[in-house]
Structures are given as structure tokens and as C-alpha cells.
Length: 460
Image (cartoon, rainbow, N blue to C red; front, side, top):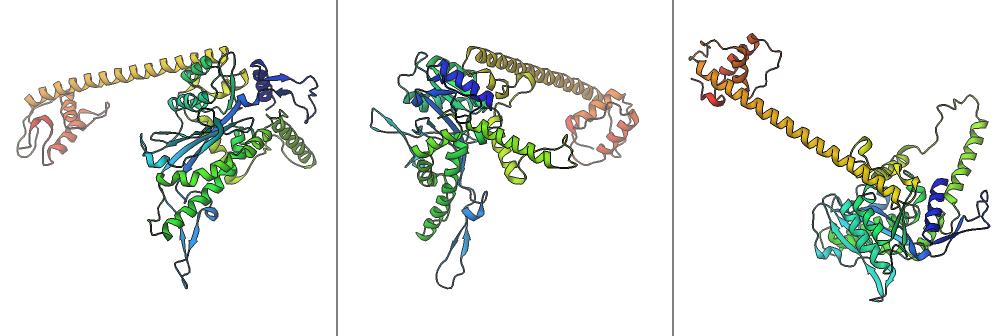
């Protein structure tokens, strides 16, 4: 984390968005390394999953008891299924929320009715005097892709900074999801004056304001809103079922609360960026010292195998969320052809010349590997076609030799290749090590079965 703060500080100072603090004291947890002079041009964003399903999560918050009338003991009501989507939200370090982005899942299109009542940003569009509206997309998985991430920057970030340029840049701090590492996105950001700074891998649960404050505020209210919506539908005589048509109704109030100016400012402070206290680093230092004291008091502990961390479901969920955020698409490819944030986050902004050149090189290697795979598959298909043609010729030659009586006895003498050709034509794949006698026995067995057998017509 210390390296992350150093990289971020250097990038912001270089972009003239911050200045070094001449009174900075390295060992003082209250001392700020830099002073951010243009906080309105520093922003962060993240993605979270939305689902109308109420069977996956905390039952205590998702279920509601519905009473039909006096004497009714009540029934537990939950919604199963109903659609999934992803929501992308964020803020500037002045606390203004960014325009939200919703990606519906399950199909490549969405209905206009699903978008009614969507959230608006607290950042005001000077041309309308209102907040910026939510943007909507759809794909099969309902999540961010390379193409959608580029569109998000083009439609959600770039328009709210009309004066953005290489000489007057904005800085974006985000996680290492693969869609943030595409050559197309980085080239666009370099051209438009958008600097991308990555957080360290597998630290978003402590270093990303959306995960620390915004989404923890949003998710409980979102679950409760779904339950209330379901009950209201039942009481009004509507089918007790939630779908994407209900998504904005249960999302918007919770979203506005989660991304209020107050919560956004809290999120930036909790991750030690605005103000630049590096508090996450100091909290890790404190925990490390506390752990060392605990170990020092222990007797008979094998320090080589001692590990610290979360236990049970909470740790598992944290790992899964971080893997989903940072591994998707970044994990495509293997070895040297894998574009991974772990290769770049500590080297400076992803939009720097060095990082961009490295990403381009990895992308080229990945492309070459993909082309090699395609070529090998084509070669294998051509060889299989050649083998099939060979066995077809063998089968035709065997047909001329083969005579079958009503007792299914082979009178003609077939060589091993003839037998292999006949069996292949009948849909069998004899082992290369099979003996001729085994092949004859298999053929006799097949000929003893009623019905058709390949190109040789029906058994007599």
C-alpha cells in the first residue's frame, strides 16, 4: 500500500493536480504527503452486481412475512430469479457522484421501460442545470467488457469534464479489471488527457472507496427495497414477482443515498486519498505490529506455518469479489500473453508511455498466440479430413471384396486396412494397436445387428 500511495502522489503532482507538502513527515500518520489542489478532477469508480433474486444473500434482510388477515400465521415471501445487471458508480474527490451506468444481463438489448426513474448524478450538467443521467447497456453476462468500458469513459466520464485535454488532465483511480487494460481504452485516454492509476491487486476491499463506503451503504437498502416492492405488489393484487422492470424502482433511492456527497467524501477519506493521509497503509502497519505482539506472547507456535486472515464465508466472499473485479478478462490468455494488473500497478499510471508500450507488447503476444491456436486447429482439421478420405477409400475397396451371407459370415479375406476402413465407415474408431483378429470379431458383431451399416447398404 505504501507503494500505491507513492505512485498516486507522483502521478497527481506530475499532472499538476496536486503539490508536494513541504512539511510532510514520513513517520507521522497524520501528515499528508501531498495537497490535492484540483480535487474536482480526481475521480474513482467501481462496478457492483445487481440481482432481483432474493434467495441468494442474507435471508434476514431479504425475506418478509406477509399476513393475509386475522388468524393467518403468515408466509415467507421471496423473489427467485427475475434478472441480473451490473451498476457502475463513482465520485470525484469533491464528493460529486458520477453518472451511473447500468448493464442489463441475459440479452443484448433492453426495454425502455426498464430505465424509467434511474439515478442522476450530483454533479450538475451546466447545459441542463440537472444531474447527468444514467447510461444503459446490455449484454449476455450483464457486466463490463472491453468495449463497454471504452463507452463508459466516452459517455460517462469524458462529457462531465468538457475542458479535459493532455494539458488539462483528469485522473481516474480504479481497480485492475481487465477491461481497464485494453489498448483501445488506454489509447483513448492518452489522447483525451485521462490518466488511469491502478490500485494494488487484491486490495480493493480496503483501498477502494466504493467497496469501503458506497456499496456497503447501498446493498442493505437495495435488499430491503426489493422486499418492500414484492410485498406492495402482492397487496395490490399484482403478481408477486420482480423483474428488470422493477430494477430502477428498488435501485434509485438506495443509490442516491449511497453516493450522496457526504458518503462520497467519507469514502475518499477512508482510503487515505482526500485528504492524503495514507490511512490504509498506517492501519496495515498497526495490525502488523499487533500481530507481532500476539505472536511474541505465544509459546510453541511454528512461525513458519502461521498465517493470518479472515475465516469462513466472509473471507471466501471477499476473495471471490476481488477475483471477479480484478480477474475477469485480465485473466484471459496464459503466461506472457496475460494482461494482468499485477504487472503494471506499481510502475506508474497505465496511460504512461512505458505502461502503454508494455500493454501493447502483451496484446501483440496474445494475438500471436491466438493466431497460432487457430492455425493449429486448422491443421488438425485438415489432417482429420485427410484421414477420413483415406478410410473412405479403404472402405470402398473393402466393399468390393466383402460378401455377406444370411449368417453374416465374411467370405472374402480382408487385410487389416480394409477392416479399419469398414469399421470407420460404420462409425467405429478402432485402436491403432488392435489386432486383425480383434477387428474381424468386432466387424462380425456389428454385422450381426439389424439395420444399416454405413455406405454398404442394409444387412442381407
